[in-house]
Amino acid sequence: MLQFFSKYKFFAVVLFVLSAIIISIIYSILKPKKVLPVYEPNMVNTELVDSTVQYVRKYHKIADFNLTNQNGEEVTQDTYKDKIYVADFFFTTCQTICPIMTGHMKEIQERLKEDKEVLLLSHSVTPKIDSVARLKRYALEKGVDDAKWNLVTGDKQQIYELARKSYLAAKSDGDGGPYDMVHTENFVLVDKKKRIRGFYDGTNPEDIDKLIEDISILKSENK
Image (cartoon, rainbow, N blue to C red; front, side, top):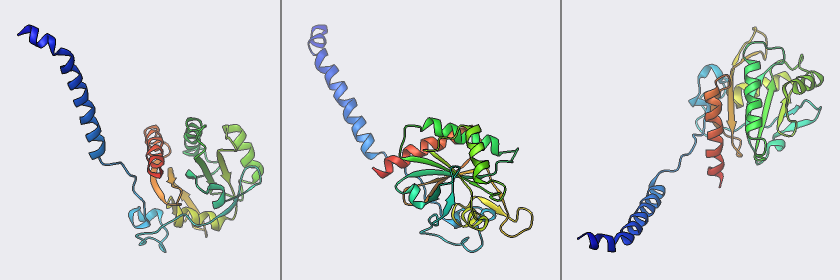
């Protein structure tokens, strides 16, 4: 009996390995591919969405924009054409959540430094204060890579409408004036079709890890 098992031991090992490979292949085929949701305005907290778009259920995309970055260069949708990008809202004089958010954006920049498919975009919610020169100083202080990350300023109404109608990431009436807003800690993941694919707490390290993971999922979705 022992001689029998000894004789066929090699074949048993080969059969076991082949079975494991076949089971693994079947599992990978049957396992559903993870896909990120496409966020529509009606799926988001109404506090963060302008009343004119709160009930939109499909086809929501980031509107065209024309802003100016820390180098005085024009930044538009074409700048982000065929790119995945992470957007947020901040202001340079903020001493509460903004430094944490900026630090986490810097971390994303470093972790995806060699990934040409992913860019970053930070909008100032106090554009009258955050001039090009001020944004440039801030960018140098925070280690912003100009090729990867745009800090933008521009028309306040345009930024307000982008925050509330496109990115769905700000509360209105910051101080009761027209086109004022209270920005949130949200980082917004945008795909190559200008659709929102995720919201993340820009002050939470665990959410930053999830964002990086979701970017990988989004990239595999595009293949």
